[in-house]
Image (cartoon, rainbow, N blue to C red):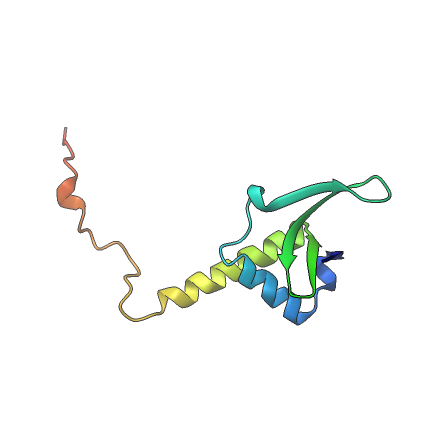
Length: 101
């Protein structure tokens, strides 16, 4: 299988969508690969497997922000779903025994 190193800024729409689908909750430290490129620079990347190749997507602060914004957008959409509680309803208050002075 081909391994292709690509900067996140050069991802096509399809690859960007696949990246978001592959890491729906975002990526963590355990997903990061660190290696030296041909110029001896350290690179951090995440894997993106596709049928045609294994992409190593170089990450940076902008990609972290993009993933974080996507997760916030996704959470906002989930909170608009009927039947989901948006706020704490106080149902656990009876479980807490708070002492008053």
